[in-house]
Length: 168
Image (cartoon, rainbow, N blue to C red; front, side):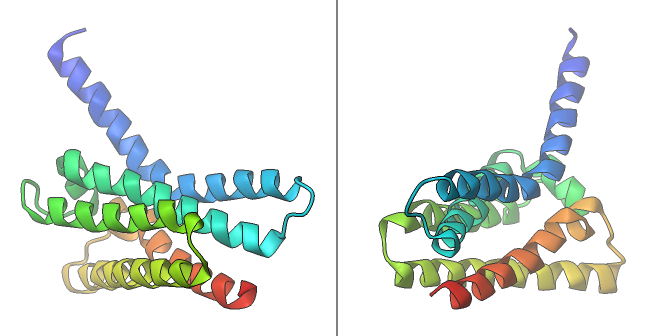
């Protein structure tokens, strides 16, 4: 395989990953909650909230964080934003920070869960507002700006806030 083919294969893999990542948290949450629900003594709402924080904030935060930090160019292109700029590293660190909170949250009580959800919601709803601005001002409807990621940025924080209020 020549260098161009290898590069295009990696590029294709990254582009597919960008489209799939928003669904990793959903699938992980569903599977882990189904397993927990099959265990005697489980509390469905509590398990759903805990697994949602782990997968939708934690695992997904690590994935998007590392993506922005180490594969910034194809991600920036998918968003319709300039490549090779420091914003990628900073967004990656913010995603990674919320991801770390999501992964460690299960070791703490529900007040820590709330703090994790608030940090996540501020970052992701703020990112969604930025995507809307891009759509309105710059007519940027690139898949990474107006596609599944945008809907994740809006729906998941609201879902987590509502679920937290209902469960706790």
